[in-house]
Length: 246
Ligand code: FPP
Image 1: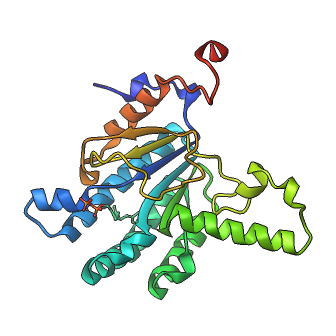
Image 2 (image 1 turned 90 degrees about the vertical axis):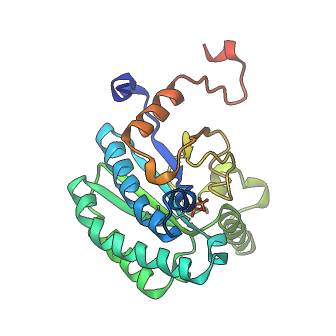
């Protein structure tokens, strides 16, 4: 099926978030170590970035490493960080060829030094690109982000810059890592798991979810296109009735 031709290009989501899950299980099925699954997942990252940029999505956010992922065996954490460094280095060219700007959300300064340095360098080398922004969620969790925002808002109140009664959704959202970035309209999660896993908890309030029964290393352009078609076939009511929408 040619899913790309079925996409209504006038109704694209501006922002698509992705939970890249199932690398470990994919590797196990192939009789290989978990790290091989992560390495194989890089091709899916590239395909997603290229496909999204080509059709005109403005933002793609990828959940690459959660604050909970530090609890994995040390060798796997080390391998993920090494993979991140080498992928950032290698893929700067792909990002520039596709006019994609790199960004990141999460507790970045607590990443291993080498990883942080490579990330900042990649962000700098792609900062003039304009077609799409690809955000990597690294050392990220939604609860961490919200707690952090609460601290920032509390200090604004303490400094007398805002009255408590004037705090609203918009004001709060400006203190999140995603300030000035629209909430994702679509979240794709691979691997068949149907949960949010502490990802973008504030931003997903009205997001449509697509849970795909394939592992991340098998994710290709066609899966991305089909998820967009399914998204466009849904009725998004935002608390209203169906009649009010039509
Ligand atoms: C989840 O699969 C995946 C991760 C924790 C890491 C994702 C990282 C990549 C795809 C590699 C490179 C990415 C970038 C952006 C450079 P899992 O290990 O939890 O799989 P499992 O649930 O089957 O064990």
